[in-house]
Length: 64
Image (cartoon, rainbow, N blue to C red):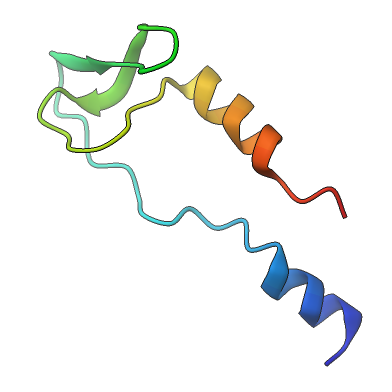
């Protein structure tokens, strides 16, 4: 396996599941900063605002 293929398999950066459509308010709170998210209140699971989602992705990204 080439290094590029091995790295792309290891550093899979795709979103594991797409965000649900946000039909409109009320929106769920971010579990970290309590700001409104793009997720409806009825969404099951961890909800993060766009800023916290980006910061979490930066923390967990492969460093190469």
